[in-house]
Image 1 (cartoon, rainbow, N blue to C red):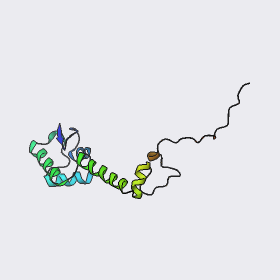
Image 2: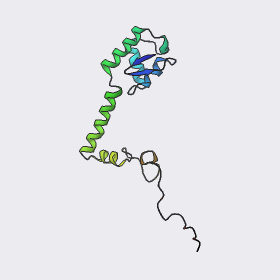
Image 3: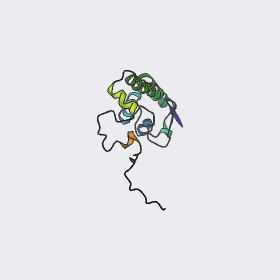
Length: 128
């Protein structure tokens, strides 16, 4: 049960895959970290020695922004865009796509569930 950057990484997986469970580390950064720490990428996490785990931790602490610090940084960047009323900030405030995607169709992830406009359905006949 290895704990790296405050995250418990899965013991049964290879180290190069398990490192991607840390927010801010993708496949490329995982390979770079393991090369810098001189650890074989295909080793299982459960088979790592304490010294290898420590070297991985040191490389991440020294060279990478991960987890809470990275999330705080991203949040502050978005807040700054909102505060200065940049176009991207306005899109963030409105909950719309920020990178130029079309919104007439296909923006459901950002916009949420589609709401039917009133009057689109035929009126039910009422009994008198």
